[in-house]
Length: 315
Image (cartoon, rainbow, N blue to C red):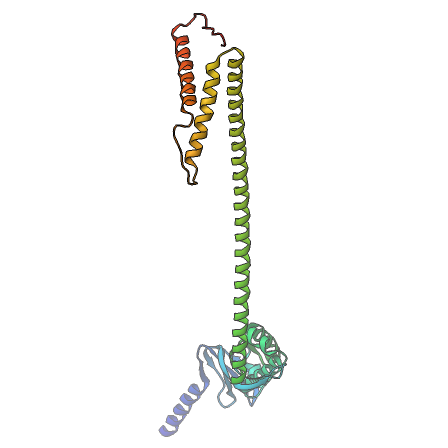
C-alpha cells in the first residue's frame, strides 16, 4: 500500500511538471492538442494539460539576419556580376510562420535570391553600381509582400557587394581615367579662356586710360601753347606799341633777345660745329646796350612814381 501511494505521488509530481511551461522573452510557442493548433503561448508561465497538449513550434520573435550567398547576375546589358547581401526579418505571428510555410528561413532566403536576380537583371551595369538604394527598396517591397501570408515582416534588404569581372573593372577604370582627363582639359581650356578674357579686358582698360592720358596731355599742351602764343602776341604787341611810340630801345631789346636765342640753339645742337666769335659783336653789344637803357628807364619810372614819362624823339 505504501508503495502504491509513493508511486501515485511521484506520478502526480511528474504530471505537475509536465503541465507547467515557461516561455522565455523573445519567443512564442504554439500549443497543439491532439496535433491541432489551439493557441499561442506568450512569454511567461503557462499551464497545459499533460498528454493532451504539447508544444508544436518554438518561434523566435526577435529580428533575425540571413546572409544571402554570392551568386551570378546577368544585367540588362549582358554584364555578369557577382552579388551578395543580407536580409533582416522578424516574425509577427508565430502560428502562421509555423503552419503556413515549411522551413521559413530557407523560404525567405530563396525568395530573396530569385527576386534579386530579377530586379538586378532588369537594370544596366552603370545603374546597378550607382543605385543600390533603389535596388534595396524594390527588393524590400517585393519580398515583404510575398512573405506577408507567412506572418513575417521583412525589415531590410541590403546589397553588400557587387563585383564585376576583372576585364570589365579595368575597362571602367580606363573610361573613368579618360573622363577625368577630359574634364581636366575642359577646365584648363575654360581657365585659359577666362584668363584671355581678363587679359583682354585689362588691355582694353589700359588702352582707355592711356588714351585718356594722351587726351589730357594734348589738352594741356594745347593750353600751354595757347598761353605761350598769347604771351608772344602780347610781347609782340608791346614791342609794336613801343616802336609806334618811337622807343628804339625796345626794338633793340627784341632783336637782341631773338639773336641770343638763336645763338643758344645753335650751340646746343647735337651736330659738330665751329663757332667763330665775335659774330657781329658790335650789333650784339649795341642790342645789349638797348636792353640796359630800357632797364634804366623802367627803374627810373619806378623811382619817380607820379612824374611824367620821359619822351624821346626818334632820330
